[in-house]
Image 1 (cartoon, rainbow, N blue to C red):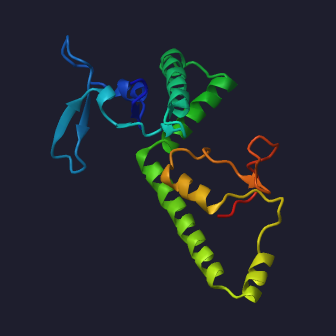
Image 2 (image 1 turned 30 degrees about the vertical axis):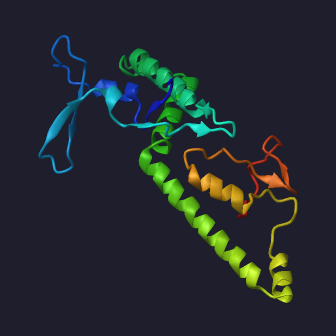
Amino acid sequence: MQYRNQHTVPESYLSVWCDPETPAGQTPYVWMWTKDGNSSRRRAPRNIFRETDIYTMELPDGSRDVTLEQMFSKMEQEFAALRRDKLEQRVALSPVERANLITFVAALHARSAAQLRHLQSERNRVVMLAELIAEQAARATPEQRKAMAMLAPPPSTHSWSLEEFRALAAEPQHPTRLHPRRNGHNVAHEPGALRGSCRA
């Protein structure tokens, strides 16, 4: 299946670290060492730092949305060409090329498995706090609920429901999967839609 194996560290980035003394007829490989430095092994870049469908979103109809992986693939191709034609030749970058390089480096950080685990941990924490608030609201007296309502953001404020946050926490690799809502309506395509605050 296309785009099934997805790299958390791009193959195009890893390829430059291949052993220049790779024997003829063998697939170029990099050396992977244990943290203590006591053992190592050779692996081809295409076989390391990859996970199955880590950036794939499953749609309601069961189909796979690989938009994010395709975006990363395009960035990797642009970086490979930029490194070959400009960086390795010590040629000055244009403003657009510099922006592409910065975007690629930023994506390296955002797409890592460690970063995805961090996002999931943070979103799970938000869900936990939201569930705690919901439990307290359920036990509150009418007077307490009235006081709590006064602390809620105005109706025009962008927000997510608790159910949406739960779904988002389950798939941290998709920070834009769900869109904030205003008065129960999706506002993802309104100007400045992502600039408001969110509430669980």
